[in-house]
Image 1 (tube, rainbow, N blue to C red):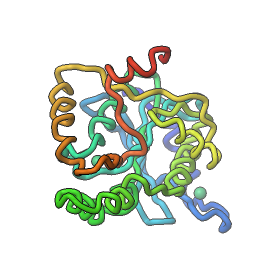
Image 2: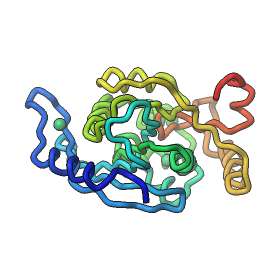
Image 3: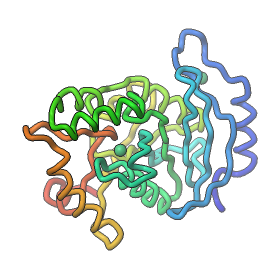
Length: 249
Ligand SMILES: [Zn+2]
Ligand SMILES: [Zn+2]
């Protein structure tokens, strides 16, 4: 497995021991453990972070050696138990995660930051409450408010710190939402460009995309409210992307 060499791993562990940002900084994370993690989508190393702010145990999945590198492809992913683990069709989370994992595994190096904030920070119970509201066909405005449109600045604060802890110098962000670049830059991470997350049609995801399209009608309520977004951006499928961004990539 090629990843961060042992000497780099040792250095990261050593310098993070007892790391603490000055009191003035609200959010501080530190690396506690690093291990090899071969996955069905490629080789990774898993980096376990302790977060002093919300006591969440965040994770970085690192492919290749990102130490001191410029232009590192990075994907920010918010934890979604129902999507990531169970394969729920109410959201795109699992597809986004798998697609990012595959894309990055094909590159020389890259990082997936897995933020332990179910429902974008509102928590698992509140996320299911929002689903419940949707199931009953009312108060979608409230459900949306509870989920997709809640912006938590601290996500970006923590993400930027995690990347700095890994000595990543600048990144290329895997996202379909250009606004997210500004958010990271505001927190001191240099973003050189954006890589769109486009899901190409294949046997593996065709069923998913078709089922989702059919189900989406049921999950959206009577009005024309926007659907709930659990990740900071929406998945783009190949055909849609081809029509809207023919010049890219
Ligand atoms: Zn710190
Ligand atoms: Zn989800």
